[in-house]
Length: 134
Length: 292
Image 1 (cartoon, helix red, strand yellow):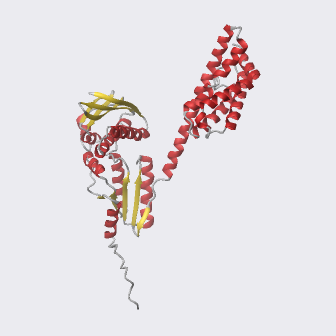
Image 2 (image 1 turned 180 degrees about the vertical axis):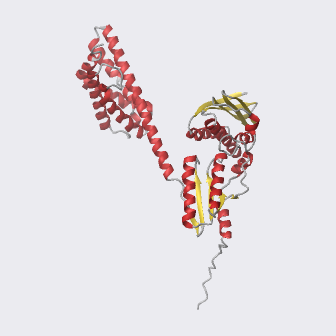
Image 3 (image 1 turned 90 degrees about the horizontal axis):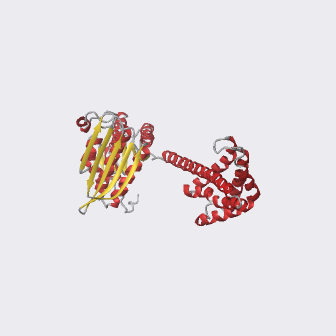
């Protein structure tokens, strides 16, 4: 698997969420994703970036444009050093939120992507990796 | 450390004209393509006043600390230059080059007067480098602040120009949403919709999201809250402008919009609104009416 391009962006303010959406959309356009696929990965990025900011207290995202045996894909890795998630199963459940949202962000992001991986340790932070292939 | 910069300040006083000439020449080369943005006269004036202030500041101070009082006037001049350039669309690099391009003429002047004393030459060049680097960084920082100011202003303007609530028909309001629905703007927009519902006594409000590029759970939540609030006030909402990719995304996200009437286009939503009001659009008969 080869990385064609990689970018890292900070997520510190709510304007950064908008910027991350734009960067992800640009990357998806570069990989000539269909409009539906673009919208899906951008929406997933929006959910995860907002989680990073609101629950993780800010963090970073790495946007990787990948090529695997001729298949093109977009991988996003969100990392924060926030309080972490105590119960991952509960967090993944639709409708559960520790904040004031709809509680659909994590599950929604998972359904919008082909690959989804989450690691979290209470007190150390959270890392979410998603990927969508063409 | 006494009078560390005496040599430099005297040099600047003596050689001001020569340094200025050379400096302006270098600036012209650096800004070759940007003649339209700053007039030549502006350049000469700002450069002259900067150089003059620089000499004065050097004479008055013994510290490198730009925040000390001896540098106050020069700081002000620099701030003005940086902010003017920032608002005119110059990059931080171009603004910093203004200061850095002063190095060459200053170093040349130092060399001319100290060519026989290599040790002093080296130490004075170091002094000059240190100060000019500081000034260059300072001007970059101010420039950045100027840009941020500009961006903040534009953001504010966008908030104000936010989407108007329009009356489509007696009792039918429409809210065409455009762009990013970050929480600050959504708040403003939704509030104005609720106010308009009260003041016009509308019974149907159409929220059109054709111009919203991303509908995530936060946007959906804002929409649902507005619909619920409008309903409490006796008005029904129709959400229109749901494009295919948005529809698919909403389904994957698991957002329940079933309690809301949704339509693909604003025209469809308007048709429903008219129907609800027991109104219909009919084609006008073109034949001249019978005389009578």
